[in-house]
Amino acid sequence: MSEDTCVAKVPIFRGLTPEEQREVADFARPVMASPNEQVMTAGSSRRRLLVVHSGRVRVVHLLPNGREHVVRVLGEGDVVGEDAFVLGRRPTHYAYADTDAQLCTFDHDDLARLVARYPGIALRMLQIQSERLANAERMLASMGGAEVGTRLAAYLLDLPSRQSDEGVLVELPMAKKDVASYLGTSPETLSRRLREFVDAGSIELRGRRGVLIRDVDALLTQAAL
Image (tube, rainbow, N blue to C red; front, top):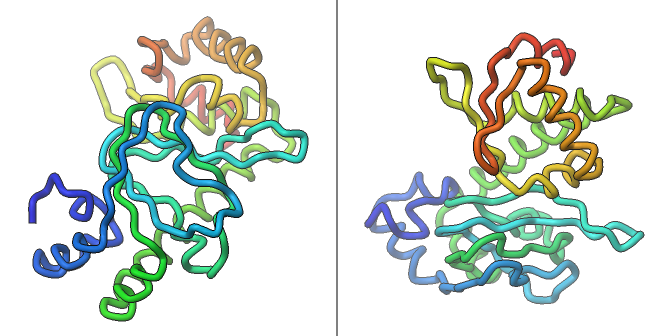
């Protein structure tokens, strides 16, 4: 099984043998999406699992006032639609390609047949849901009644990172306007808080999405962790 295939990149399928992955891949349907193209619709009768093969996909929830709240941004190997499958419901979120994206999709009926044959797929789906719930609870705890700077510090500390001689490097997984939406604030307020962190020497902005955390302790104190 090529490591470049959609199935091989997905955590819920990685426990399968190469032969089993090939069988799963037979059910996959390829989809190409352009930036801002809608790939999933809340309430749609078309229920399917979407897997990101390359590019990024933005998952949003439509608020009663018509504004979109960014729920998460998916990268290579991430999936959306597994919660609707597990709960037997229609999709509750919208999803849009954030960049040019290659996806593969699995109709829920096909997925049910695969789960019946390989129960480990369902177990890994539940594990992903549990991890997502734990992350959401952690973010809610940091956001509950907290000012934007506290939420932002907790968010930066929770991003995947790598160590460098200068500090800790992280990359925003989405545009700053979407980070602002995720944190429940405005782009202008987010920019002010980022600038305050820069002026305090806690972080350094690098390019459009790169952030060098120079003072981890300062962010930990800000986030009250």
